[in-house]
Image 1 (spheres, rainbow, N blue to C red):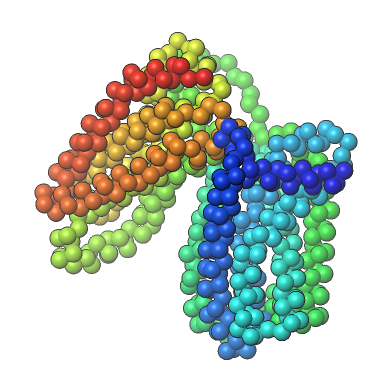
Image 2 (cartoon, rainbow, N blue to C red):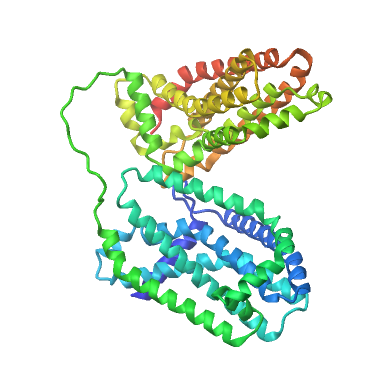
Length: 534
């Protein structure tokens, strides 16, 4: 039975490469090879990045006679990278898999189901750890710092570190599963957790280049703290340098922790998977409902669809989240922004228009996400519901356009007004910024909707296939970015000649004309296409 479960897990893993989530069709041999090449290239880039970090670190620690500190630092990086790469995946593998109910209905012990899933988590952790740990081991031994015994221990520690990452990931996944049983809006919580994950990940990547210099400046202090406490971290470093006793102690401790974690999960997984939602239940209260118009109902329907999917929220409007974070950061760093602007020399300010720069930045950020390029395809096999309702197809499509504008324009205005107040931009220029951003969003909403109507996909098996992949999403994303750069370039040239406010009005005019043309096409030809989709 366990063999069959493992075979099923590996088969599903293989299908990620051999089958497309867009319609569930089998990929061609060329597509599979192309994906493998792209994945391999990406992994090599990350490997070389960590190898570049390992070289100065190994030289610094070798000069100080603290080779063990080199492996401690890379061990910590390996754990962080592994956990960041596996935490959310662990929850989806252990507790959110689509076949959990089916497997539990069969005469299979939950412990065996858990074991097959933990194996997949371990392999995921092993891949993440290899990307960080392998360059460190290669560099250390190429430099001639290690011995044969040390090399063997370093290779074995890769598997031990992967087990430790699996333990941490499983515990985090367990916590996420427990929390998800007690909350009502799971999609919103998933978005919050994902944004936190993204923030921590990029902070880790950006600070990584500063790590060698920071350690070089404080290496004596770091060594004194770790060596003085004789903690597991210190034993790990000694074991990686080839000392038998510290290696044995650390390995046994991790294996014991792994066994304990597996025991706890095996005793709780059935209860978590079969537990009913314990969040606050809705209670019916009789009240009088207000009648709303058809268009308002369509807008409400689009918002409901948007907030029901974490994938939709994260990918379709990533720019909105960035705009909100930017507004918060601008308020916190208001003094620094004012000082920066005041320190710009008059010669430089004569070549740079601050209002034009703000408008260009807002347009570029707004181009990072598109709602309309997937909104038609997301109707899927239930599109007939809208087609048979007594509403005009053009009204349905305009509701999708308005949704895109609302979700992007409000955050953009919040950031734009915040910067205008902090940088003391005039009221007229602030209005022009808002008008230009609105025309940009109006144009892109129509363009994305047109692309989705021309290339719809209603046969998807995973909503991510139409939100993140496919021709409409790809073309709209690149077009939005290119258009944002063109807007920025035109504003730079025109603002120097005629001023920021007139420049923004001139750039906004063709965007508005283009948006009107898209609207005309959508109202006629687009509505006809939507009415005949099946």
